[in-house]
Length: 275
Image (tube, rainbow, N blue to C red; front, side, top):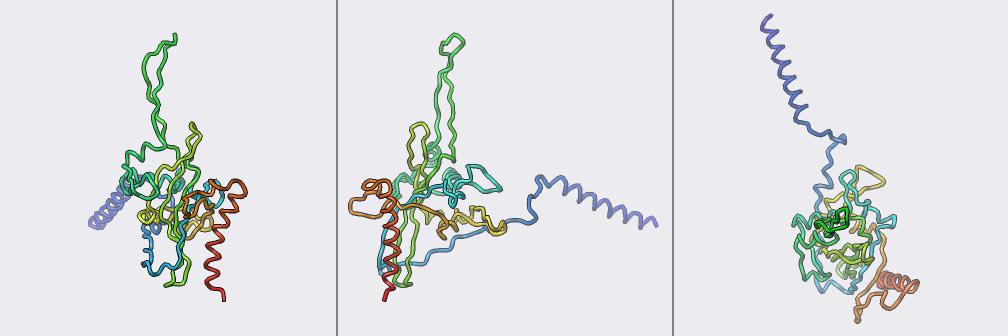
């Protein structure tokens, strides 16, 4: 009888020890009934090899993505983290500050930027002289202006359209992306940096994006860009004068010229299959 009682007490002690240990080691409740791993472990599918002889036709274009448009809202998220989802600029900027990726000062990727250079862009410090009650200067005070992701209102994209005669397909490859930052004081918009897109595809494949139709099938920024799930306006095509559309057309004429470039790409592929 004593042996059975001793065994029962021993089992109870083991159970209580495990329970107390579980209570003390679990520091944060899990706000989901399963562990999300799919997007965080994503790897971007490599592009097919394309040789020069495979390229029958090629045209480079530049376009702008407006984050205020409904279809482009995932690029923004109002600058707030929500359910581990971050704005596009936060994903890229944090990677640059941690030296995970290299940013460039130009769209040709010739002038790399240091992490300190990226950190200064869009942020800064002001020195203000403090005054006493009599209006006399006392000391200087440094006020920091942190980076505001909500000021990134547009994204500039450089991409190559080409007809692959090996696969008989019109294909597109994004080469570079630049966030356009709006300076509220100077009232101007300028590119913060350029990122070489083929080099950050794996990073973007692990950055989750909200899927309005299914919480269990989250997208990534790489999905959105590769599947062309965004709206944009073409602002330039490769030309002998290296001019943007806004340099020779304005207003409705600029929009028509943008549509003309887009139609030219579509029409070229269509005409190849005309009989």
